[in-house]
Each structure stands twice: as structure tokens, then as C-alpha cells.
Length: 106
Image 1 (tube, rainbow, N blue to C red):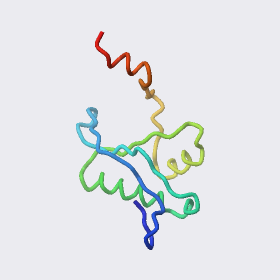
Image 2: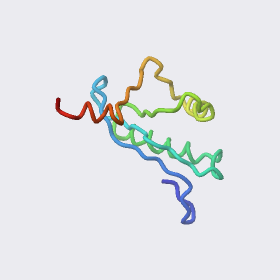
Image 3: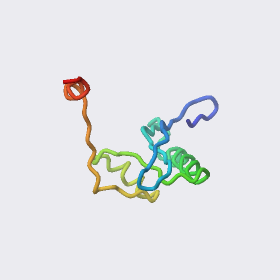
Image 4: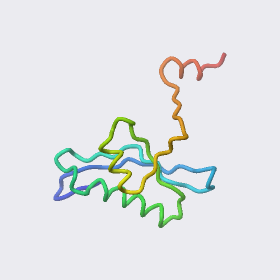
């Protein structure tokens, strides 16, 4: 969380994951949010730097997240930080009725 003079400017929600490819933990960033009036001032970068430093300090293998393919401002921001799109991976999701069906014994 980024807080200045008692005001919350933004936050990052993340959790530890594990890579079977690397045999190491890493960080998955679920959400990064900076209040609109504070965007473009380096707060998002500071949050990402903090999480990257946690990875380095703990010898965790990677730091990853998803971004919607139409969110060009965020994509450009992430690329400028050295992030690389994992184009060869496809996200799959089961939800709603399909989740209920899958989770119910037949």
C-alpha cells in the first residue's frame, strides 16, 4: 500500500505462487491500483519495485501478472519496466454453470 500523510494513494494485492518450471516460489500480482489523481507520479513503479525487491531478497524466481490486451497504457508501462508478454500461454477459466457442473459429482 502507498500511503502519504494518512491518505492511501494506491495498493498492490499479491500472493506467493510456485513455479514447477523453476522449482521456486514467485509473486503473482492480482491487482495494482493507483488512484487516478496520483497516476503518472511513480507510485505504481514504486509498488512494483518493492515486490521485485521481495523476489530478489528471497531468491524467488519470478514476478508475474495479467493485463488485458486492450489496456495499452498499462502494457507500455510494464514494457518500460522490462516486463515481457507471455504470448505462448493461453488463460483458461471455468466459472458460473460450467464451474458448478465440473464441481458436482456425476
